[in-house]
Length: 127
Image (tube, rainbow, N blue to C red; front, side, top):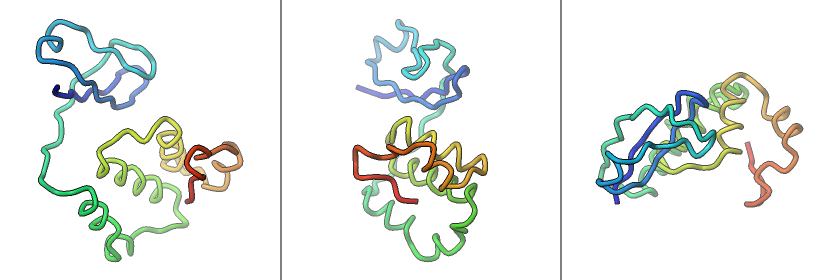
């Protein structure tokens, strides 16, 4: 079953919906986060025959990390967003919130204080 990428015009989140070709023209897509039907179709990425490990290895290469200023929350947030795109999967609302807050300039320490259960399901999130 194919997937279709959308951006919600209300909550601004990107969503990926799975539906059959028959459903695509018949059903109105709905945002799973805010339940809005104001979705705009996005052009999906072109898939390359590259393993997830190869993509992550390339991203974690020393030369790629050399430009990352770990004291700059915005840079850290952008790196985390890039990492999630490379993984090509939804990492959840908690991850999205952390990335958005970092990109707005909020410090990792402040985020951790306001979200004490951050990443509790998988052993914690380490900045």
